[in-house]
Image (cartoon, rainbow, N blue to C red; front, side, top):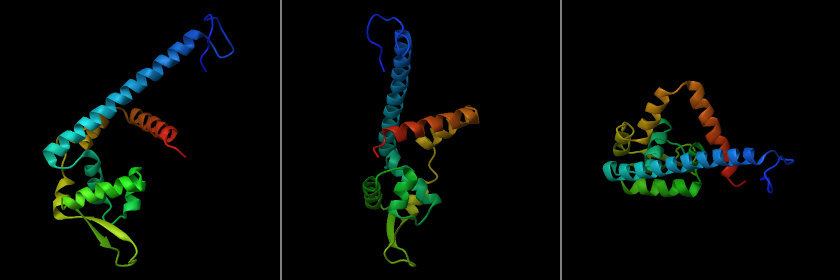
Length: 162
């Protein structure tokens, strides 16, 4: 809570503490917006160069290690809304990189499978977000990555409506 008034110590701390805390929040928000912008810019670049966006390539990578998962399973793995995954799948189907198949054990269940064209993209590294994350992970201590991941997950939970 912000302390209003003459700047003297109040029940919630000093005005300086509020300003310092507020400055830290703004600094982190600036970094988050810079990251969001960098991800969006890289996604657009990937779309121009490779024909798929960052989120589409992430789904392709997921299907590469989890062949046959359902759209709802993919949504859970990627922490995306099911409608978002449906949109990504539709785009990848149009590009002939993903196909839907009926599960042979449960005819009600849809499986997502990569085509040979989609499987080729699982090997992409140059210029991808995947490559950037891997290079950054190689440069930081494991504890730093764990702390950052924990913060990101907590912030995502805070921003996600219940």
